[in-house]
Amino acid sequence: MAGVEEDIEIGGKIRRLRRNRRLGQAELATALGISSSYLNLIEHNRRKVTVNLLFSIAGYFGIEPGELVDGDEARLAGHLMEMFADEVFADSDVTNLEVRDLAHANPAAARAVLALYDRFRSNAHRVAAAPEAETGAEFHRATEAISDFLQLNANHFPLLEDAAERVRAEIDAGGDAFDAGARTYLFNAFGIEVKLASLPQGIVRHFDPARQELLLSDLASPETTRFLVAHQIGRLAAEREVEATAAGIELPETDAPVLARNVLSAYFAAALIMPYAPFLKACRDYRYDIDRLGHRFGASFEQIAHRMTTLQRKGAAGIPMHLVRTDIAGNISKRFSLSGIHIPRHSGACPRWNVYAAFLSPERLNIQVSEMPDGARYFCVARTVAKGAYRYNAPVRHVSVGIGCSIVHAREMVYSDGIDLSSDNQIVPIGVSCRICPRMECGHRAHPPANHRVTLDDTNRPESLYARMI
Image (cartoon, rainbow, N blue to C red; front, side):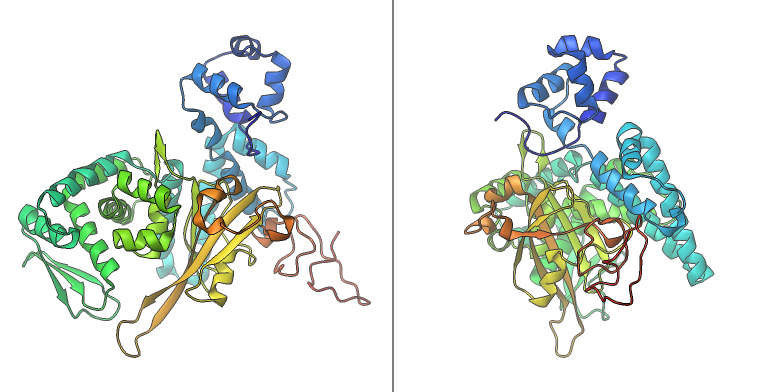
C-alpha cells in the first residue's frame, strides 16, 4: 500500500503538533528524513502521506497513527460551512477555503464561533415562539453540548466499559440468564424490585423510591425492558464513573447534568447488555449483520447499530461508523460520525440519503453506496423502526435509523455481498444540505446554494426552480 487511501486532510494536525513542540519545519523534516519543502506541502494538504511516513510522524510525537487520521477538523469545517450558509451571513462573502483554514488552523476558535451561533439560533427560536420557550432552548444547547462531547471522544468511554464489565461478571457469576440475573443483581445490591405494571400512556418506566420498586410498562418490548433494567443498574452501580465522565462536558446551567447522566447511563446499559469483547467478536464473525447480532444479544436494531459506533478501544477497534436517526419530517434526533461523512447540525439532511428513502419501504433494509460532492464514498444501510403499539389502536410512530462506513470498509459488512462497489452505476450522489451543496443539477433541491443567486427565465421551466443560477 503506497499511501493512505482516504483523502483525509491531516496537514493542520501535523502543523499544530510541530508548533506545540516549538519545532521548525526544517528540524522536523530532518527527524523524519524528508525535505522541508515536502513537509511544507504535507502541512498544507498538498501531498498525501504514505503509510510509512504516517507511522514515523505518529512515532515521533508519541501518538497512535489513528489519532492523526481520525481528527474531526473536516467535520468541524462542515458544521461551519452549514453555519455560514445562513442568510444572516449573506453579505460576509466567507469562502469555503477560509472556513477550512479556520477549522484546521484554529479548531478551538472555530468551536467557539459555532457555540455562539448555536446560542444565537436558540435565542432566535425562543423569541419567535414565546418567552416560556426558554427552557426548550436551554435543553437544545444541552443536547448539542453532549452530542459534541460524544463526537470528540469517538463515542467510547473506557471508564464506563470497565464498570459494565465488572457488573456483568457479577451478574454472570450467579448462573442465571441475563434478564433474571440483572433483576437479581438489582435487588441484592440495591434492594430494588422490578415489576411490570400498567403505566400511563407514553410512560415506559417509573421508579418508586419509597417502595424501592422499578415499574416497567407491560406494553414495552422485551428489548426495551431489558435496556431499562440495565439503565437503572448503571444509574446506581456506575454512578461514580458516570459522574467522572460527565465532568468533562461543558454544560449550560439548567437540567443538562441530569440529561448527561441519563445519556451516559444509557451507554453503560448498552455495554452491560453487549459486552465489548464478545460483541466485537460477534460483529466480526457475523460481518456486522444487525439482525443476527440482535438475536444473539437480545437487542433491537437501533440498540445494535448504536453499540456498533462505540467500538473504538485502542488495539481492538471495530469499523469507524456513522449513525443518524430521523423522523419522517426530517428532524434528526441522533447523529454521530466516525466514518467522515458530514451529518448536518442545524438543518435537514439531503433527501437522497437512504435514511429518508427507508420510509418508502417500512421495516425493509435499504442499502446505498453514496458519494459526497468532495468525492468521498460511503456504504450505508438504513431501516425504519416502529415505536409504540403492543395494544389495539395504539399510536405508532416511525423513525429511520441509518448506519454506515467509508467505502474502504464496506466489504467487512455482510450487506455488501453481491454489490459491485467499484461501479459508478451503483453510486447515488448526495450532499449535506441544500444550502451548502454544489450539485446544481439536482432535482431534489429545496433551497438555492448560499453562494448562488437565482435567476428566473420565463421561457424555460427547469425541473427545479433553483437549477438556473449564476
